[in-house]
Length: 174
Length: 174
DNA sequence: CCAATTAATATGAATTCGCATATTTATGCC
DNA sequence: GGCATAAATATGCGAATTCATATTAATTGG
Image (tube, rainbow over all chains, first blue to last red; front, side):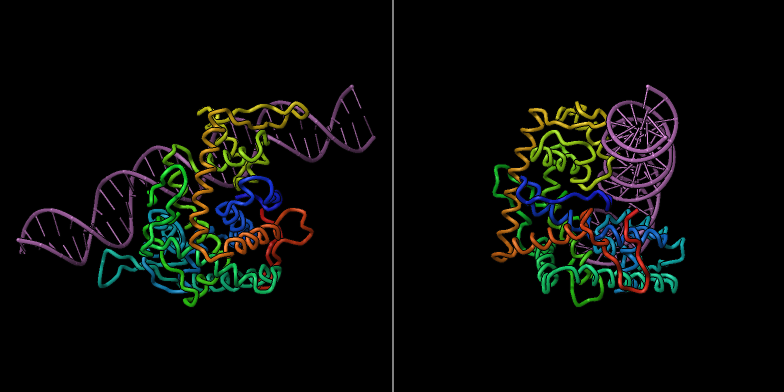
């Protein structure tokens, strides 16, 4: 991740990258997240741990696979994150009664308290960003982002991003 | 990165995460990039290598630090990427005449050819995405993304993302 | 001009992460 | 019920990434 101090200007007229949607998405995501991620690390949490806490605050007792999808990470990696969070007393595992292959992850009181506090701070941080945008810009942006995401959702019935260009792309990620 | 097949739905009414700007940015970026990144890897390139090729196609002979900023990665990591790309004959290093601390990175003919082809394919891929959005939506989205990015640019004269919430955040990333 | 400081890059160790696969449990079919 | 298959998670290992710091070169102040 680029450090805050040395983020450089995007010039839309200076070639391909500055007007490339995938780059703008990655760069904006990186830029907007850097500060809060630094704050998360100051609290002794890693960024993926914060994401899991946030997801569990929304809905406690989710399964590992589900959480990994939400938190944009691999299942095997999440398993290790959960190990670490459990050893810190933030979450605990409990295997599902109905299907004992499933492992459900629950917040401990400490996890709920820390997660709740960070969610409040994240919302305050988000309000501060939005306050610096034009009125209505954030709503438009969020809609467009949800729209982009929805294009690629499983079961949308549309092949994901076929390419009209010179080389045929795979329709599915490996 | 979440696999394409198991990306799940974002429900804006289901709690914090589904309406959190930083999450929507990360999720949309991840979703939109997955297919093309898979294509890049099929070409024998790693994603960071593709980013560097693209940046060099825009402007050849950039310095290492500059490229790392653009490509949203750490300098020490980029050094290793450049090593690898050089060993594959895609780029070559040349130290700056005026300031010999600086290392400038240049495309080889093979690098320019591969980069040029991938840029064309990336643009085709981008057109395919934009074709599935509403008319004008892409332009609005890109503007908003540039706006977000600009908020955090060094030297903007505004403290990056001060938080009005219960806990004061650092104003600078570590 | 020399010492101290700063800037740009490189290096090595440590951490994080992803891929392939093993393990355990459920489900479907005969 | 028993076997084949599929699903959910865990594990081991290798690759990718970061962190701290070394190295080399330029700049600044005396």
